[in-house]
Length: 424
Figure 1 (cartoon, rainbow, N blue to C red):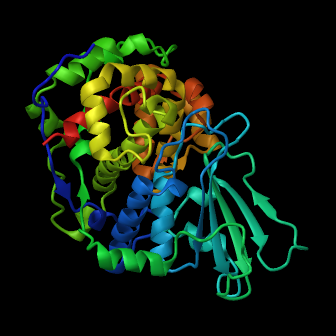
Figure 2: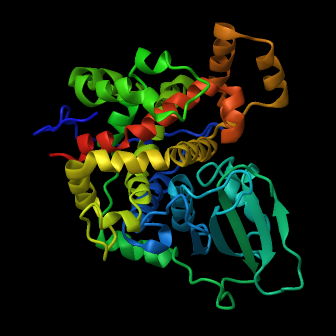
C-alpha cells in the first residue's frame, strides 16, 4: 500500500490565532481577552501533560486496557476551568465500552460549594464546558460529609467523559485523599512562567485532517453499510498519500475570511466555518495519543522502539518511517475502537463549542425527508448550532451511516497525516 518517499509529498507548517475569533452562540456578548488567554494556557498545559505524564494517558491507552484515566482538579479559577475544557476536548481513549459505559475518562473537580452552590451552572458557562454538562454523566457528592448520598445525573450517557464534582464548605480540600490534584491554578501558572504561551495554534496537522474530507468520490462511493471494512479504503488512502497535491490542500483549507467588523464576525456562517476549523485542530491534538495507543507497550520492542520511556514525537516519526506497514496492521486491529473514540471526541467537542443534538421535533421532521431533501434539512439546522450526529456511535449507524466512512478513513489516514505534518 505504501512506498518510500525521500520527502513528504506535501509540506505545510502554519500557526493561526483562532481562539480570539470565537464568539458565543448562547448569548450576544463576547469572550473576554483574559478568557482567550486562559484557553491558550489551559490548552498548552493539558497537551503537554498528555505528551509526558502517564496519569493523563501519555503512554497510550490500549483498546484492551482495563480502567479509564482519572484526573483531579482543585478549585474553580478561570485557569482551572480552561484546563478542564481542554482535558474534556482531548481525553478520549480506545478502551471505552459504549454498551456498558466502562472505562470513561473521569474528571474530578474539588470545589467550594459555599461559593458555588450551583457548580453545574458554572460549568455550563459557554467559556467553560457549555452544553457538555447537559449530556455527560455527572456525580455530585460531598467531600466532607459521607452521610450525604451522591447525586447522579445522566447516568446512562453515551459520552466517554464523566464529571465527578466534590463539594467542600471552603477552599480547604485537604480532607480529599482519593487522588492528588494534578490540575491547580498554581501548577498552571508555574507552567506558563516556564513556557511562554503563543496566542495561536499549530494548524499543520489540522490542514491534512481537513484534506480527508475532500478525498471525494473514493469515499463517497463506498457502501455505507460496512464502514469498518479496512479493505474498502485502499484506493482512497493511496490517493491521499501520493496524489493529493499541495494546491488542493491550500484550496481546501484556505485563509479564514477576515471579518471586516464585529457584526460579520458574529455571523453564524462565519462562526460555523471557524468551529469547523477548530474541530480539525482538536482532532489533530489527539493523533499522537492514538498512535501510542495502537502501538501498545507489548508491540514496541518488536518495532525496535525504546520500551523504557513514553514515546515522543520523534520516536513516533521514526517508527512510522521505518515500520509503517506494521503500524498499519496494528491500526487495523483496533480499527473499530479508533472510529468509535473519534466520534465520541467529536461529540464532546461539538457540545463544548455550543452545538446541541436534534430535538425530538427536529428528529420527527427529519424522518419525513429522504435523500437530498434530508441532507438539505440537516444543513438548514446547522446555523442554529444543531447537529443530527450528536448521538452514540451505535445510533450513528442508524442516523447517518455514510458519515461513519469518513470517521473510519480518517483513522486509517493517521500515520500518513502524522508523517506529512511532522516532516521538515
